[in-house]
Amino acid sequence: MTEPGTQALYQSRIRIYPRSVKGRFRNIKWAILGLAYGVYFLLPWLRWERNVGPDQAVLFDIVQRKFYLFGLVAHAQDLFWLAGFLMIAALLLFFVTGIAGRVFCGYFCFQTLWTDLYLLIERLVQGDRVARIRLDKSPLGANKLLRKAGTHLLWLLVAFWTGLTFTLYWGNAPTLAVQWFTGSAPFPAYATTLFLTATTYVMAGLAREQVCTYMCPYARFQSVMFDADTRIVAYDVARGEGPAGRHKVTRNLKSHQQREQQGVGECIDCGYCVQVCPTGIDIRDGLQVQCISCALCIDACDTIMDSLAWGRGLIRYTSERQAQGQISRIWKPKTLAYGAVLVAAIAALVWSVGHQAPLEMSVVQVRQPLFVRLSDGRIQNSYELHLANKTDQALQLAVMMRGLSGGELDIGQLASLQLAPQHSVRVMARVRLESSHRIKGSRSFHFDIVPQQRQEIGMISAPATFFIPGNEH
Image 1 (cartoon, rainbow, N blue to C red):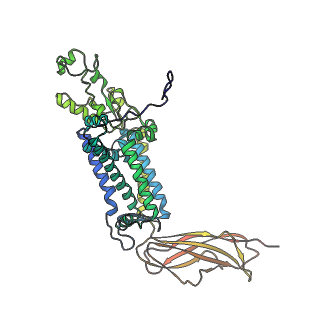
Image 2 (cartoon, helix red, strand yellow):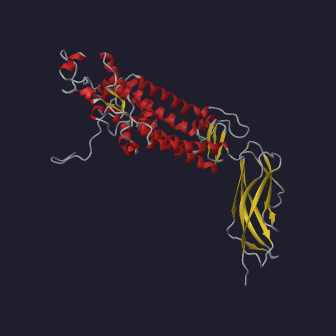
Image 3 (cartoon, rainbow, N blue to C red):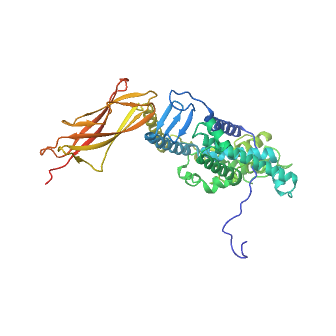
């Protein structure tokens, strides 16, 4: 408790009871939620026939270090694709935020999507806003206990379904699901599922708006991407307040004409816009950091304006410049720069994926020791060749060397290599060269891999360096 005469440093959480609303933006949110949930929950069960590999459309195989995305197979060495994808996602976020504000938060963020579902469950079990408030204020009884327990049970079921679905992306979904419920799944499968169950339940069910207000870093730095042309959810103060301010509908302030005559604005102070807000703010107080641009307050206000036969738009998407009666500019140097870099990044990633080499080779020189002087006086360097077959057919490969006159290549007893589809292998290669007093330092040469049957793949080369020690005295 706060001592008398002292000021509290922290405010107790004020519970928010968002009210349901219907309208165009709510319908858009439901459509996005349905699409997102359909993709997330059904994708692990979608089958995809492959000549080699699992028949699951999307699977992240950590053990084999392969990531299957429909017809694309990404290997561990293709990790830069993930970096490119994340960079594109960041650029897209900056680009969209500069134009349309926090629409990602309001429509696409996982926190928003799951919170919407949890609120829907809460309304179905406990009733709408007034019923939930009344239920929380009522003494504990059978009805309250049943409704509260039912709500939390359904929340936990959704959270568990969420966690288990995420786990199914990392293994064959039907097999892993059976293993999970029969107790034979790997420990990481249980740990991941239970961890995501707990975090989903806490974030979407218990914390809710606290995540958007205090935990999410985007809420703090997104303002630096705003400018006078950024579209935001805003309240038309001049229209809503008028010279005499807002006022509820009364006998003498019922029609639009009566309100104009007395200088009263069109806002009837019904509070509907505040009641539907998932973060509990009053948009009439101006743009606030808690606003996630979900536009539910627009739907609420439009509903009231329609019932009064007044024009919509008292609360609407607008910009600071547009609200001042000026023309809002979208295509500015900042926006064009973001867009140009975004297009370039997408093009680079698409080109890289589309031009994935069917066969890859990398060469690493053995450094310990860097060279060996054999009993006959020759110098030997050792190399580790990493070969990756990214095709869906086995390849017969010949390993060759060029560019090192007088050099001898030794890869053991292998005349050629049989490399299975979607597999990689490490080959130890030894290169020997006659020692000469006139030659010292290092010489460059190439290792070549030549497919024996599939000539359309062509020869794959990788540079290497042969080290020759100086004269020893």
